[in-house]
Length: 592
Image (tube, rainbow, N blue to C red; front, side, top):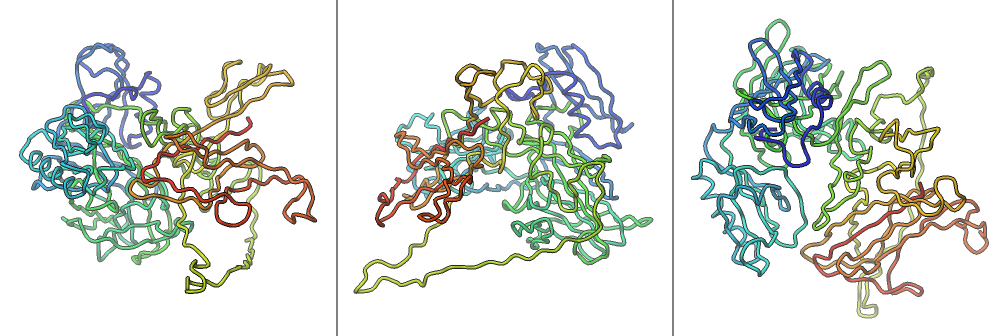
């Protein structure tokens, strides 16, 4: 990261972790020399220095925690990476070049460092959008004239002297990490407003006889990255992977041009394109280069079979790490990262999911990151959707891939009722339009691991956690009662939760609520108001009895998880109206 030192909780704690991390983020063409030391002239913890003359990286782990030497935060950074399919990229960043402008974030973002080294504060006169814009403009004016200011961030923590609830915009030296929130106040484009005066020079190489491209901050097309596509006649920007479940094959759409092509040359069958653009993307469709938030960028790359942009002939992954041109670059632990590969070691991919961190006094607040759940990163990952990659065959090593292509057909029957609008004889329309709101108790993970409650003396392995889990120690998220592990009354469950605010600016009426809980192990899924503690919906699995005469869906031995329904029909409770900004809490419990 471009930071003088790692933030609290992000220090790399051992030389083994340090050197393993460096090898995973540095291009294979670089020579890496590792050095473990205890010294005051080197930043404490894990850091990197680059010797460009010899193409060598020096990775240091300094165990002297008293060292006051800091990592460099100069304006010049460089990174390079190459792929297995013949493409490569080099990034040269100068954060002090170009005219001063501001690029605004989407509404609902804030800088984690908005209370650190605050240069100036500009409270909004009220919670109106107009007053929020005035406060933001004042912050931008200050930041533009300040040599040390890099960003303005909203701060709605009520730490200001005003107690009436208004938000303020603060001028900062460093944003820290980008956090998200749902209000209820301070929700305008520009909740984070980046001072744009930096330039990025991007050099991309690939085969000259076909198209090729590089997508930023992505591991698969479904991540919908900002992508640069190059062929013999053009260089353009594309938003790929925008077709939902078909995203792995989706070309997406062309973006408005924000790059300047400096050169496009061919030598010995290799096309080299040099382009330039500002560090901050024009919108959320474009990648923003923010080294203080992340200097390690996941890339996807592909080459075609002709000059026409179409389905790729080959694809691969790269990781590029931006390093300070002078001095040390800090290596911080932002989450574990490993590789998932084919049996022969090819086709490797890595990922770190955006699992929501614990935030006991705020929102969003999730469980999985605090529980170190294996689903959150590829190093711990023990299996799931991220193993299902297009073109891969999930078979045992001794199984042959069958030659035949399986085809199947799916047939659907759609039931519908005609819509009858309200009229003089019937004041109520026959149907209501119900917006579907989707949230996950597993908070951005899409899936998660429910580990065994404990290890046993003859089997101490807990998949995704440890091959030697201490006997008698409960796994994260587990609660047990009774005589465990051997007693007949031993009863354990695994619990996760998610806290959020769904509708910050307008009320919401519940008509239907249905959760995601796998039936065989599911105990309950409960939705609460997190301000009053009132239970809004509780889903409990029901075992089928086989009484299909009265209920044709009552299949013996099958488990159903009935949803919660509200309405005016007989047998239903009246619908629930939640005021704007109501905090919600979902808790899921599973047998483990």
